[in-house]
Amino acid sequence: MRFRTLDFIASQPPAPTPMRSRTAMLLCLTAALLGPAGLRAQGLVAIQNYSADFKTEQPLTFSFTGQGGYDSLSYKATSPLVQSFESWYVQGGFGAYYTEVDRTTPWAFSLDTSIIHYLDGGPAFDDTFYNARGTFNFEHRFSERLKVSNNFYLTYGVEPNNAFGYGGSTTLWNGQYLYGFNNFNVSYAWTPRFSTTTSYTVDGITYEDDVIGNAEDRLSHLFAQQFSYAISKRTSLALEYRYRMTNFQNQRGKDFRSHFALAGVDHAWSERMSGSFRAGAEMYENDRMSKTSPYAEGALNYAVDRHTMVRWFAALGFNGAELAAFNSRYGVNTGIQVSHQITKRLSANGSATYAYSQFENGGGGGDVEEHSAILSTGIGYQLLENLNLNANYSYSLLQSNDALREFDRHRVSLGATATF
Image (cartoon, rainbow, N blue to C red; front, side, top):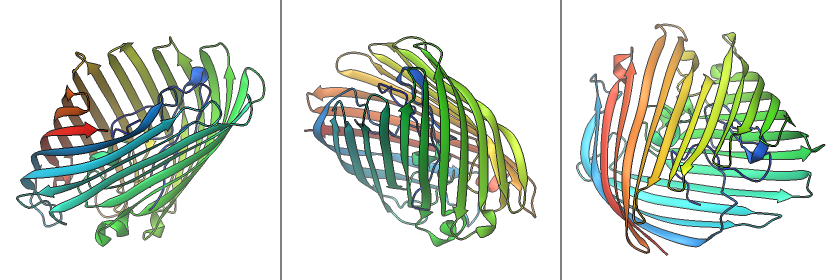
């Protein structure tokens, strides 16, 4: 299985299974849910697919990627705090992937690494950047009733796109960062209809730049308990409680806690279409404020036909990123991904991610509202059995009533990937 940055929503494993969630120093996020018909729900703004597809055997596969392109990022205002740039770039990478489909203990890992160099000089920080992503996932069935699973994800990167979609990183380009999470959960079916899932997730983020790190480095712990009752073979109802603690490494006054009281449903309309939804309240508090607001999340998988897949997610709640000058950040994140196999050799994909954020004043300035979006599209052509040519384009936009933060970005690339 290959991890894709915008590969939201988990595929469907063979039984009720929880998931994970978001927020961030070396490990952090939110998680936990299970579902009927093998659905997986998700927590908070981190509704993204970090789990392996244990239905498909993946032999040990290596990939080598080379590409080049053009990158242009333009800020609306001029300031020493932000830097516009435009440059051609080259990038090379290596990957390894493996999935073992075992009836008792399936497991999988993936690794992607790359180096990108800007020929005309990159953004502040440096001209050369490094990216690496790794996952390791496994399940173990002690019996027909008892199952444990663990999902691990770690990335060292520079692109806001890598973690922006689920609220992990800052929206602005802020140099290299390390982000990761680990979710461990235990599911037990007490009866054919009633089951519980207990989970613990730790996730966090740390930035290489000290100025950014002083404001953003943080670590979160999420504890969750879910109760699920299957009213039919296709539908389960769920009740869930979550508790999250987020500690900033250098901004103690920004530490916050959240309690979640949620109810939801997991439903499979058919073998090709399934969804998971949760709604309720999030009770958010830190040293300066306490607020209770609506919380909701949803995920949907739809295999339109043998050649077309659609994945969608949405989440409404508090976000722990970019709180240095604010007391809280509340908003909605949503995204959709579409992949289509046009012919045996030609494929296409597209995705769109949108976030609306309300930053509440932390003293001094006024509140800030922002709209941010990432649009991307690409095509791939299987020239040889193990050689794929590809072309990609992405557009990023941030609109804010703080003019210093507004920007738009265009990125184009052409490349090839060889697999062995």
